[in-house]
Image 1 (cartoon, rainbow, N blue to C red):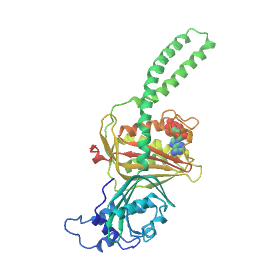
Image 2 (image 1 turned 120 degrees about the vertical axis):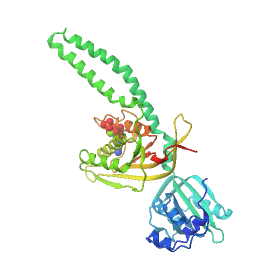
Image 3 (image 1 turned 60 degrees about the horizontal axis):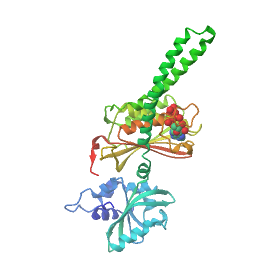
Image 4 (image 1 turned 90 degrees about the vertical axis):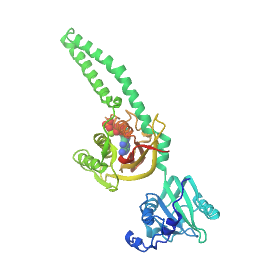
Length: 397
Ligand SMILES: Nc1ncnc2c1ncn2[C@@H]1O[C@H](COP(=O)(O)OP(=O)(O)OP(=O)(O)O)[C@@H](O)[C@H]1O
Ligand SMILES: [Mg+2]
């Protein structure tokens, strides 16, 4: 269970008057002077936190919310305030028992994996903490975190497995196919001078086909390249803007792009060229999946707190923090492909090589990042999670 936020700060959050759309500055001005020893900006801090926080009165009506709670519940402050929480989260949810447990014990309780559903809410794996704020009035603070992405990543470890198999296939093809092919080609060239002119087209056919297969195997060589690419602080919005312009000049000419960026995000630690390659492949797949009319690609960036991954073989964990999403409203990834989506040679397109996503997975993994796909008809989201430039390093977890 995570520790709750300071109760003093939470009770101040609860004291915000229910004024929908009131500016933060106005709300702050209405607060009493900070008490010595407390964070002077505690209210602004709660508002800025990317973790959903609500306070509930004794009847479980919403007394206050922060911006992240509005985003998580998909409702505005004015729609939430003074309304029963059960209007937004199914009344039979174990969440309500947890809230009562916090009130009964006048303490903080938590649950790391809970399903939350409601008219506009569908989180299968949420972390929930409830903290008693005021035992006399029954006011509690509720902290909600959507852990669906982390859960899926922990279940699949997709990108790492896919990269391993791509490397193994590439190494095998280079050894077992490319080397013998050069012998076959040499033999065909020798024969060419000895066979009757009418049969020369056959030796030429052998040469052409061996060249084609060698080209295919060469395309896989990038997977065997384990030299580390130079990494530096990269402005991800600049990269995405560049890729968007490339797309608009070519395959994405008729596509409507929508940007949902958090401009305050810091740089990622990455290789600009490789990141361009990653997002070019994702944009291209999205564009190829779109309907003929009304196709939209939405590109989003956001901060994802508390996400870390174990380093293969190192026994340590790396902190990640920046999520880039590429969402399209196309037909969705065919069910038959979903389990092997990041494997090489998996394609649902006629003429598709099935190398785009395998390369994306390799490059993202080389960055110490993660990739995930969540796809249904009409909504496919690829999420790329990257390390933040100044926070790369060993996390103590
Ligand atoms: N956004 C998407 N929507 C629907 N299906 C997708 C999407 N992205 C990928 N796919 C499916 O995953 C398959 C694999 O994609 P991948 O990019 O690896 O190969 P490809 O696009 O077929 O060929 P290429 O090597 O030329 O990129 C695609 O053929 C497609 O069926
Ligand atoms: Mg592709």
